[in-house]
Length: 248
Image 1: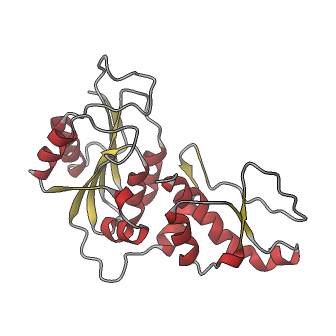
Image 2 (image 1 turned 90 degrees about the horizontal axis):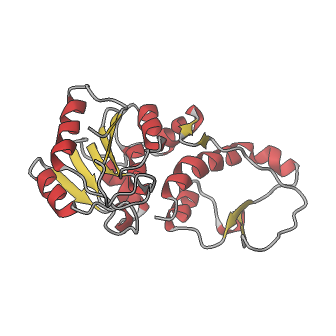
C-alpha cells in the first residue's frame, strides 16, 4: 500500500500545517510542497481532500540533487510510533464519518494476502473461525482510499496482522476493539500508540515460537491460532486486555 501508514499519520498532518502556515511561508518565497515522484494513490487523494492542485506540488526525483532558494522543513509529528496529539486531532477533524455511513457494527479481519510479508499461513482456517463469529474478511490494498475510509467508519472490531491496513482504525469510532497479530518477533508499538490515542481498546498477539518463524524477523509469514485470536477479542469486550502484548 506504499507506506500508507506514514502518508496518513506522518505526512497528512504536516500538509495541514503547511496550509495553515502558507501566508507566512509565501513571504519567505516558499510556494510549493516538494514530493517524490510517483507516490501511491492515497497521496493524490490526500492532496485533493485539501484542495491542493498539481501546480501546488514540486515533484522531485529522489536520486537527483535539486537546488532551491528557500526551503522549510516541517518536523515529524510521530516518531517510532509515538504520535503527537496535533496529528490525532487533525486526522479526526479532517476525516469525520462519511455522509451516509452506517452505525459502527461491522467486524473486520484485515487480510494481507496481497502483500509480500507478514502473511498468515493458515489464513483460510483463521478466516473461517472469524466468519463463524460474524467477522468479515477485507483486503484494504484492493480498495480506494475513500472506500477504505467508508468501510472502517462502520467498524467496531478490527483484527489483522501488523501492516498498513490497520492504519484504517483512524476512521473507526472511538471504542473499537483492535487485535494486532505479530510473527514471533518483538512487536513494534506503532498501532498500540495509535489505538490508545484514538480511544480504542487494543491488544497484540505474538505468534507462538516455531522453527519456521524466525524470532528476529518482523516481516516473517506466521501461523495465527484462531482460538487465541477469539479469546483476545472476548477479553477486550470485557475490558481485560487493553494495550498489551502477549505470546501466551
